[in-house]
Amino acid sequence: MYDADLEQIPLFVKAGAIIPTGPVMQYSSEKWLDPLTLDVYPAKQASSFVLFEDDGEYGYEQGKYATTRYGCIEKDGKTTITIEARNAHGGYLPEKRRYVVKVHGRTAAQYSVTLNQATLNQGWTYAPNEQVLTVTINDDGKENVLSVAPVTNVGTVRLAGSDSEHHFDRELKYSRLMSAIRTHEEVGAHLAVE
Image (tube, rainbow, N blue to C red; front, side, top):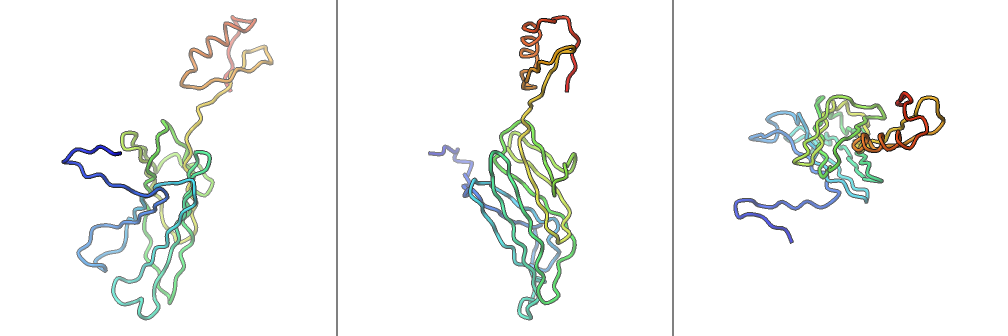
């Protein structure tokens, strides 16, 4: 059961949904889809969606259109979103644009974001209250693979002059580190953090 105030209308979205939206327009060919927003609701089962685009008028009647397949899967806490290469038909090719990918249902405190296996240190934000991670990328029509994974926050402390290692969660590092120091035979040793 879901509780909602009378002033608040709940919106239910099926797990695995990929919902594309564009800018507000008065008619379909008013402007290009820039940015194209993808609201992604990951699921453990693979899901996909195919976007059909044309010139917004009658290009599809002459076979001028493009399709793009979007896929998503969540496995072991890691969400992988694949934007396949665009398939152009009849010479139609949308103009360059940006994707705004919103990954919903993210509950971890920190994330690692990669695009085509390269770590993104900027170009993305996380809103913990909304549990949404938002990534903005350029659409060049080629395949792009976006991965979002929670950061594990695990580190290793080695006491200087010792071969023993003590693993700790950075959020609990002080108490575990102090415990490791107290139990180590060289309490006064200098710390080397890896």
